[in-house]
Image (cartoon, rainbow, N blue to C red):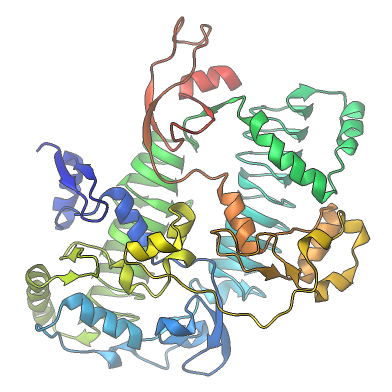
Length: 585
């Protein structure tokens, strides 16, 4: 079998399906995709609302809840205790298949009726951590998402085994950290990116085993460095004091200047370690995994993203978010805990297998087009069938999906084999993860036939403008806890700005303890600012930029090619692995 070039029915660009791809599609008995890999990823991400939370009421118990679904989403929402409870059965919503309508129309009519949980994650493992989403095993955490096993952490995403940390993205096994991106095993790390096993560092990038360093890059096992220059211990702390790191003004000036310094030093073409035969970025402990992004412990997979560390996930294509002992997942989002042979599904978890076009299932197998069922088998559109009836009707529906496919508002055709159409998503594009990695303006969202979510009006009055906040924390008292602070972006950004925010007690104590100035941006805008230091899940074919004669390639420029998430127009100096190792180690 040879490569096949196809035109994406969404972006109209050509993409290649390779022989190993066809082998996977044949293995799980699905047709080849009609969307390109980027468009397939975007389509899944438009069903992922990680951070936008709304206040409403549980439709079962009537209690006030926070939810990923706004009131205008038309979803039926239960609080997590009610949804996970045994006092209701989603099969009571079962309907007969109607061959006069497209199957997906029927499925999404059902989706609006059958209850879904207000938030995602295992709520029984949460202690004093109600304002969180896509999480588990938290204690005293607030507004963190896609995170597990944390204590006393506030504001952030993709945080694991961390304590007493605020405003971080991709932080693991760390403590007392603030405004970091992609850092591991760090203690008292501030405004740093891609660092590991470091202590008491500020504005550092790609440092390992370092302590007491400021504004440094590519250091290994060093102390008392400022902008990569070594100092004595006494001179280091004397110089550090001059930076006035408790000053908001000084911090902002350093942020504006530090990138120019960082970009003078080469960077490895991808973030990775302990891998064999991988491509993509932020890949760890994986084998034969390609075109993937932020994945760990994965094998024989392609086009995957946000796969949980320690997951042991294998043989998956186009799978996004979660994992944990999962295999044979295709065009599926948010699935894990012993999942097998899952196709075109969203949020199907815990001992599930042989599911297609299902949403919100737990402990189920052999179901097609079902919503919120628990421990069921041989169901279609939430209706129970015998084994023989199930497989017969399943084949009929697949044939029907191919002869009467759903066609969206822009003419995109959804036969059997496609993930859910974006226009059916209960979330506006601008509040989903798609906007974080593939940002669009409101006009562009409309042109693509997607939905824009208007921000809900708040009944607050801004008490203090960000420009009027004191420069340092030592002159701010607890009265700030009662104030509404205006966001510096004033909703003029494309970052889902909340226009204003409040400082909570635990957050204020952290700033006081670490002698940090108050932020001037709302938590959403802070999140988007951190995302600028995390590469996007798009790959370019490039060549190593090294031209140092003392490296392995000798005289002339290195000609090693690789796939990288560093776009050609970016300012970073990008090296292949061998040149980078010779430069840094």
